[in-house]
Image (cartoon, rainbow, N blue to C red; front, side):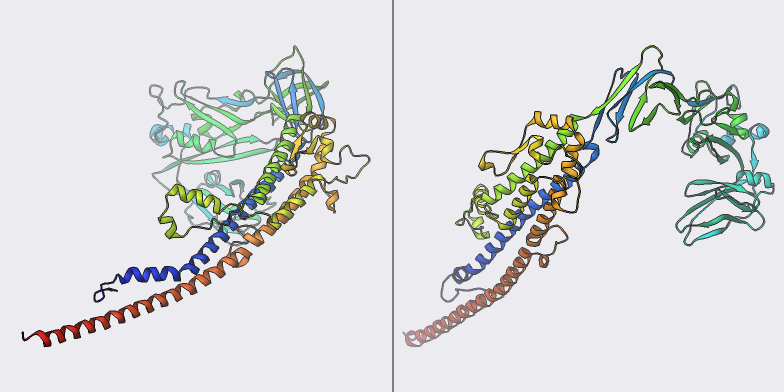
Length: 603
């Protein structure tokens, strides 16, 4: 604790503060210098952020053929047929004379009420075992046993897997029917012989309690197996649904449920399975309905959904032969009678959607260049270039107010927030004025944009921007801003959209053979690298020692740290000197008092 002025009566603390204020002047200059460099660094990084954004947007917009070769499709009757086209689609037309029928999904409905008691409807939230009692075993297909589930993730390649719970039900047919094996969600066919084992099959060895696949499963494969074990009190049932894929190959999905499952839980599991069906229970009619998630006829001459197991056939009363729908769309396009399994299909890059059947009046689809989308893409590219140009030019020309140095903490304490804001606005101005790094980058960007593109092939339609109606502003003060002749650009797009695309996206070994967008990205990448070398913050340069201004800041920090130690020593010296003075004055005062007492004490 420092206490001064007791003997002298002087404000020692204030005197030392005043003395130290003079000593701190070099420190304030260092701090101001550091702040200036940080402002300069932030200004550079702001430019780099804008360049990086432009660089990314070029790739995502004008370099995408989906934007620059966009097509639009018009329909003579959009209430009946609509269409979209990819960039690969040629300008063409399609006439659909008639749509005899739309594609439909196969459906099946219970042939009667499904409740066990005709006077009381089933509660889909209660367990099935409680609502379908023991005497209905034959109809329901109950079997005694407990369903076990095992799952594991392989840590090594293997084809043989040992089972943990091995107290199987004794009836081998029941065990085989209840066993479901999946690898990464794909169900395998369970067989009881190894002879001719196929890739989609698994050998279930009931004696040795093992499963064996035709080949090693990969590391990380998720294997799950379900099977029935002995139980005198619990019951389960099994069922399956067979559907057909787009190639007409049957896909069998087996289900095994414990009796404590509710109807809602059973339906939910069926709907989320790879069987590709959608089932729900209607309490009003006391029936269920099942519909394939895919439209079309994938099993010519047969049904799309085949139900097996007492639960489906006896309880839910689903009769495979009563299936409705599952039809292909039938239509005539450009004179050709054809079919599709869906109402949404693609021909030569054009995706056509049939909305209703008709035979009375043909519908025409015309595929043309989407001039508006291509125009908007190019305009966005030019607008963003102009914005970047204006930002960099603004920084290069920004006034530098050298009399407005960064404020010290002490100076800020004496000013209002509004005054501080106004002061710092001028102090931060001109951080990049006439900066050579940005000036060179700007020159390269302008050159890349204005130079002709050397395109291969005979007589390319366009070689430079001016031929598209994009020219440099005549106003010298705008320093290279681009202007668009809208009518001329639209005419160029309509004349040769591929030629317009090439002038921006052509590629080649030399800069002259590269399109304008590719050149711009290369120049932006180079500029960002140079700015990052100076100011960091991107391109992998985030630490002070990796960029020039960062190293300058580190050097100033080191100087500030050294100067702070020196100031501490100076302040300690001042306190020692003033303390010595106070001590001497205290001794002098004490001696004076003693002499006064001796001389005048006897009177």
